[in-house]
Length: 291
Ligand code: MN
Image 1 (spheres, protein in one colour):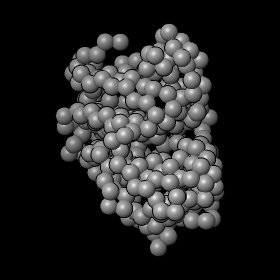
Image 2 (spheres, rainbow, N blue to C red):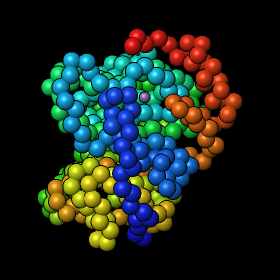
Image 3 (spheres, rainbow, N blue to C red):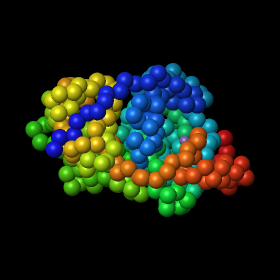
Image 4 (cartoon, helix red, strand yellow):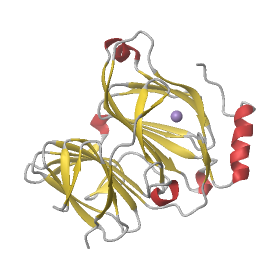
């Protein structure tokens, strides 16, 4: 049975995160897209294409903590450098993905990469927070850097383009990112008039974000650049057809049916755990990271 679009969202008015990320928040600000409705995706910030002028002092976000979930950064344009209290560092650029499992707690900072900053340029990125099931919230932090060239892909028939599988499974091809609950995360690169069909269980919460170009869903609903389509939790299959050369981020995950207590950089199950997170952070239990 077909899965249909429930609602199409225009980008929310942008705000700055630190001085390096100019984002539209879709989750949880979007009507019907709160943390419960979109579980396991509890946050989605989208830095639509934005020009940052050259600077010697890289822009970004300084040291801050996270606990209880994973942060996933997908780069489309520009370069971001990451450092965390687990000793992980890395730079991601076009097509690369950084997957940080904060779990029991890390400090990290995210800045535009130094050389890129000196040149300046167009910057475009998605940051996603993926919730962890209660039993993994206090597990050991992890860090996965996934280079574009390592991302498995399925080439679509009839010169339609390709689907790059960051996590989950598309037509039997699996993504490299390891996840703690069933999550599908793909970038579909569709040529004009090309199409791709997707199939997810009906209870999985599913959205598509048009990064470049424009698409038609099931030959009925049009979604243009920087807009997001939320699917009904009815039916399994849908088809995206590109109206021009397009890049589409496809997200679909099994909801984690557990209580959510969240505040700022922490996403836990109870208010007590949230208070504990603040206390542990204030007592230096998230480690050390220099600003
Ligand atoms: Mn962060």
